[in-house]
Length: 114
Image (cartoon, rainbow, N blue to C red; front, side, top):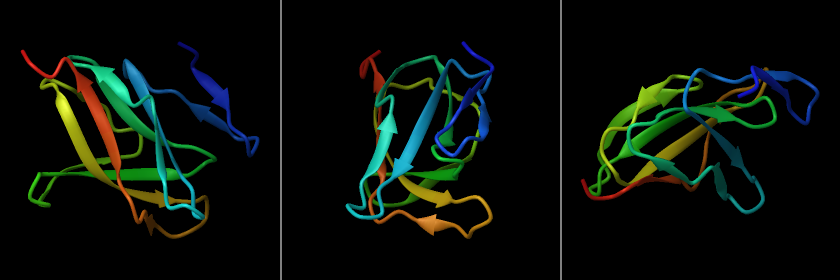
């Protein structure tokens, strides 16, 4: 894995020590949140990062809409349980204020069963 990469605005983004860096992007015209990669493996470590220099924050939600866990930009966590997880997304552009995405993201942790 490379230690850094250049993003479209010319800035350099450091990659994390996680097994998978999950990049989030928000389309202000369609309100779509793009998650890349969408699928990851159980027992991998992940971190969320924004595209285009944005910082991100995600809040995982239960099937009942309860906010369960928050992860901030570049925070690393290990996935120990498979399943499909929904999360709210918040983006902060460089020098700007946080924007709550109108739609959230989904992370598919495989396999779903032990």
